[in-house]
Image (cartoon, rainbow, N blue to C red):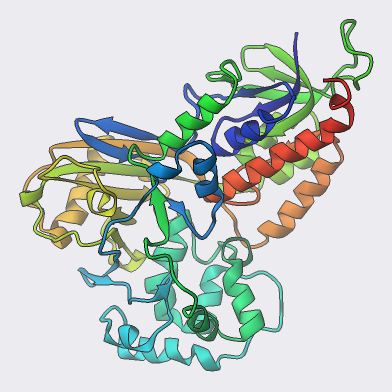
Length: 476
């Protein structure tokens, strides 16, 4: 039986980040990944001169852990900013309207760009401006994003900003997603300043990043995954090896080091291969974590299984530039539910990032699924492409069929941090604490985005190393 100081279950970005921290210590470790490749939802491909991100395509500068990791991995000089002009659009009544300049996730911070925008009706603008006079909420309990935005800015803001933009980022239901878990900055702005408009307007005096809020890599975010794998020991990541269950270890073995505590955990793979370790890091989707620990702690398994996930799909489409009438002057657009076009959003990858398509060509991407379209993945690739073309043709003036298409399916890959998530997470932490040496990380727990998962994965790896250090540090 193989024994390690730490077993990491899950080779997505959180698990690889935990392993990266462990690789900087004397600890022995292994990463078990069920899929045939590491990286989880981070997947980039190069096809005929096109560079496609099938999953996430950007790192948020405001959350610097992704940028910092790239720099540590020697990729700092390869980070690229989005191209000018940095515009994003929202579809309304069949037309694309640019988000007003100087907005924070759609929340206006200057008056005139907001007043000139045709995205909102005049009554909607008046109601949004009245947010300055809406009293702050005295109850500090959690509430949904939809409830918060409607309360402070009105129903039109929820319909055309919160639902397609704030909830759309997470492929979730605007009336179920937790404000405190996903946008704590909004709740804090209301608590401290009494108004988001007042709080965000004052923040505009701080110098903005001249290169915009996002970064990526020329070869897509998979460059980061490949660099992470190169930084780990050659045999540390074992793909195609799903963990089936974890139990408390039976105790010390005859060849165990007597100065170390006995292995605390035994992990059995789907192939029936047992491994043992003093510490166990579970970096899998919460429902997988729940299944793995079902024999170790039924209460923890139940709590993990309560975290909901949604499935999504993305469709990449390539065209000759002359086949698309729209100037594609920005990064793309989101589609409110009321527009009923068949897609959640579209991005213009070749306009958003440099060198994503050959000269004279454009690369577009559409999004499906989530809480708004839960049965989208039941459709064939051809049907999703047809839906994409039906949605894109009227607004972008596309005159031909695509040169090629590529469909990416992400089954139960989008964690839903719904109202009450922070309380559930506190209960999960209490349950985990009953098992010294057990740690959990990943998008279902403390953070959804790539930078959040990197930050939590690295912190979890450091916690596991510190916990082990009281014994292993004296031996190795």
